[in-house]
Length: 366
Length: 125
Image 1: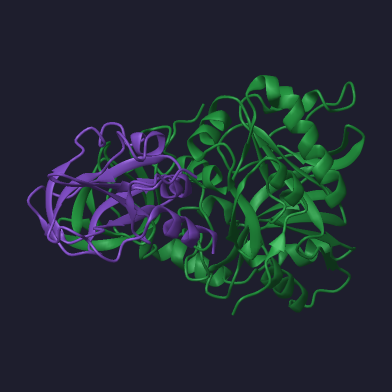
Image 2: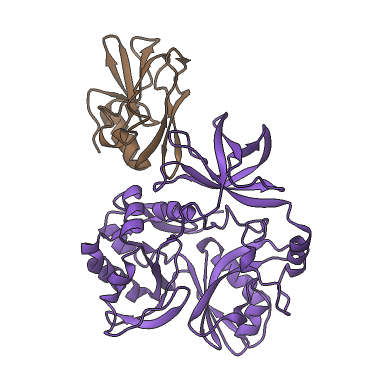
């Protein structure tokens, strides 16, 4: 089955910058511009600008919006204030993760879901088929633009483009504002572990905002960044990728993300009973962090993981960490999971390579 | 892309330089560019006898691990010992200091390899 490849609304920007493009989740997207390592470093030390227009933006509107989301999402959207967002899951009846997403409350009857490109259409179907009254789910792939400005200099760069006196949102909050006159939602969220913003707008404004930010950040060392560094940055910060670290077969509890599942509220959501049972009885698999050594092959997705010669699991995401200079990985292993500091091995091309269990956030918090 | 005329090429993006006392192998400019920043290299043991097309080395960027194939049958006679400490050399000088290994070909006139222009043609298809 091969679906047609969608072009980002920012395609002309990527072409002008000479980006190397690759197919990803049905989209033709930039994997790198100047080079993955340079882009990774720019985001950690200055700022990086990412096209995230492939991420699905689903607007949930109507008097039944909150009730619908409460009965579909694992984290409780009723906890959100206007202008606030949080990480959540769309779960199946087994408690597995159909998608991981961000939900923002724009108003009492108006929410924005930002979902994975690969799950956008399925999510829309799941939401609509749940059949909740007085709610509309709007936003097909390609109808909007999304940018992520990430890195310690993000605030300084973005501020130059905002109306005088604009107060930027706090972490996990968003505001509607004008960026050089173009209306956009600006959220203080991201997928890199750095301070930064995600900017949601219509497609036409997206191109203009992209160019404005690139220009405004030039003197600060901002670089346009592709999917390559997006992946190495998120993994250094221990953030999961759906399809690898999360899937309909993996629950948030197994992935170590139970914090984002609210079992204290009265309303049921799909898989709630299974998740409650798993929380009480314990999970049979658990996600752990692994660190390799310099000058050893890095762990990668799919590599088997061993403890004392016995296979205990598999690497779900792995990469040679540009910041740390050695391999890092998330691995799903059988419980009881080995504790931090314990010696394990992973297998690369028939060879066992030593690794240690580590916290899943590989870079220490700033 | 730089594709020197005095080398032979494999479709799998290795180059071979025939010399008086053997041959040197590396990856092409196109290959290093497609891989992007190389961060890890695994080289064969010297003395290993390999068939043409056999996996003999691995070059890893942040994104992915790529197998390197022997362009000809023969015996590995040397490896580039400087690479493990500076794998980025492959990106900077793919046809020079970024060479991977030397091989003593079984056949003095290897077959099945491409000229620079034929290799370049495979890239544009």
